[in-house]
Length: 94
Image 1 (cartoon, rainbow, N blue to C red):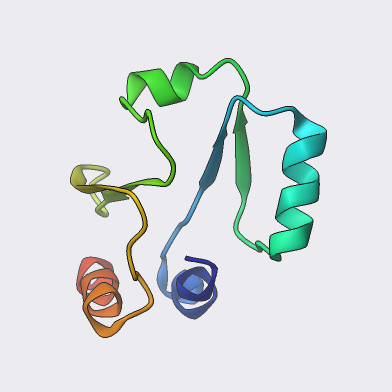
Image 2: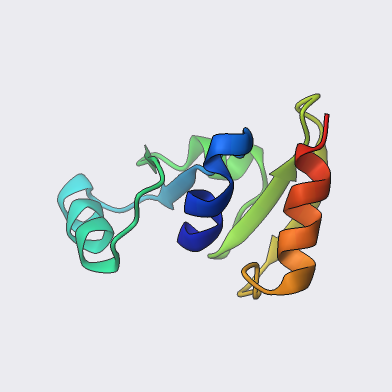
């Protein structure tokens, strides 16, 4: 996902990485070790996770320009492959 963020952020793509319930210091170390450049949100009390029914990681929600959820995926996916890139590019079209 980090590669997609870097590729598409200049075109309006927003990626938020939400950590579910871990201590901030653990999250800081993981972000640094994995080289994430996208913003990381701490959901320490899991309120956001509960509101979106995110019970496993990774859970990806795809939100369009009208802020409507248009997709959800649970588990690992190859977002950097051609189908993932085409999907993101299509959602970014005006």
